[in-house]
Image 1 (cartoon, rainbow, N blue to C red):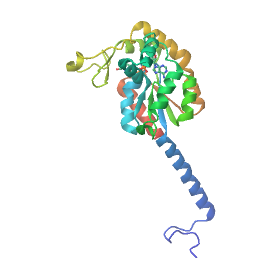
Image 2 (image 1 turned 30 degrees about the vertical axis):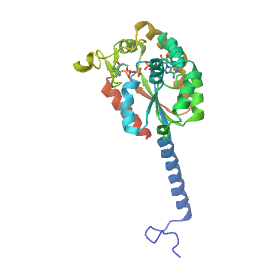
Image 3 (image 1 turned 90 degrees about the vertical axis):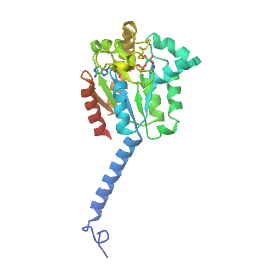
Image 4 (image 1 turned 135 degrees about the vertical axis):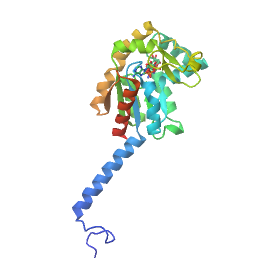
Length: 243
Ligand code: ADP
Ligand code: ADP
């Protein structure tokens, strides 16, 4: 008998060594499997740069971006009853009720492209939203882009969107090419007054989620008060550690 060597090519191994290798392989497969099918959450205050960094994460992981803000704006544009109700909250800088958001996410996660996990942008924003998400999806990591309040107001008030490409610009920090300038729009909720309520909502309802995810070992904090390129590098290194 061969006494432990596989096909005579490997050196003979004793039974305990096989068990150790097998355990290691199983652990690694589980970890990789979980992160590949798992979702990523991009977390941070309004204007932190979540939308700006999302494209790179989509490129790196192949996971589709799921932005509840974009979904709500699409519903507002359609003029659906849900969209009209949501608009009142959005214009006032308040969070849209959890039941509406959870319903939107449940529906979105049924779609074919969500099978290997998605990149959540702007969701979850409350602990009940995170608890509901836990029941329907695996979250592999939460990337928190940290920016102080005093930098947020300038970012939000100077934000401009290209309605044709969805690209996000800033009048000072990321100016659009001159040929696109004429078609840029400013979101109706991107005003100085609304920013204050949005920041209040962030601190009271959303920020506690950082500890919630940290307790679960999922939170990766990134310094967001830096150039778009520098934040991009930190995001890339966070992704390469997890995937
Ligand atoms: P920002 O990118 O500035 O953080 P979003 O586009 O994510 O803004 O959201 C715009 C508005 O849509 C929010 O101020 C809020 O009214 C509503 N909204 C978006 N996502 C959620 C959510 N997960 N829960 C509750 N309200 C949400
Ligand atoms: P969020 O999705 O978190 O609300 P955005 O990605 O829309 O934030 O960014 C908000 C505004 O700030 C945009 O106008 C964007 O061009 C600008 N911005 C994003 N990241 C940075 C950064 N690191 N430095 C300066 N401005 C930034």
